Image (tube, rainbow, N blue to C red; front, side, top):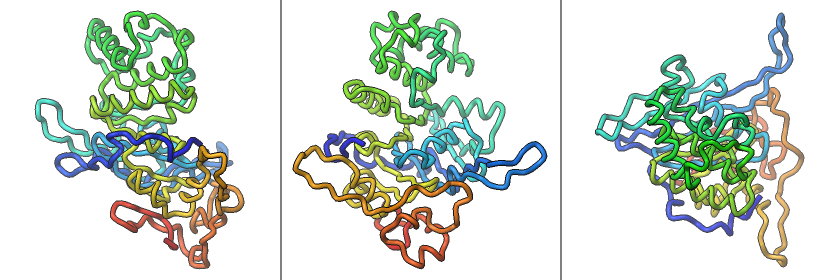
Length: 357
């Protein structure tokens, strides 16, 4: 994990407004849950379930970036896939409220993407896109860059062939692949990792979505390419007004990219606050452990080991008590005897799920 204390703050690293002009957020997630069955068969119902995402609630404003951080297997990517409808939720609501068009149309009524299907789902797909972690694995190696980027336009029935060519050239230039005409008929294997990731960003943004899930889009890039891609995504967010859910395990990247950070542990969000507030004043024991594990570029620095014990508990039918109980240095009998703590606002805008905070 890169250092959170040595990544420069960016001008837009302050908290953005979390609501549309009419006071409504772009995205409101309530009680989002995803259970994967374990066992069972064609004639027998499953007896156990993996609680990949369990009662997750948060809000995201128009043009805002929210970082979702946590260790591998905590459910970050599953949340992203649920939001873009790559997975069907077991329960909860995913309410999108898209802003009106440039002609001044009113903000639309909320869409519950957890419940829609058919034409409504296709229409919602025009506003919601995803950037995958591995740009090469998410592209058909037999298709050209033009085919890859123009496919969303074709699926949505947007424009004729000339419009699509012009739009692909425009978005290639916007993401820094110039001269754009020289990339149209190349294939993914002919590009570098950074160039492929820019193609992935172009494919997600070519239909001008309002919301993009970015699943660790820089984790497979070298440091120089990573910085360029992060700067590009920030510039595009400002220019196009795109809101991001940025899935990452790297707190330095989250600090650079996001207005707010939500920390996940074993399918639960355990802390959520503005970025600088969370990094400066972590309240949940798990967040404190994450921050203590961040390397410090000082050979003389004496690291204090995270004050947690044991390993991540099983996600299969976990007990109703606090998920972090077995590893928590502050756990009490109250934590053991009560359900998982709800998210409560401890200071303005700073929510924590912990009885002992």
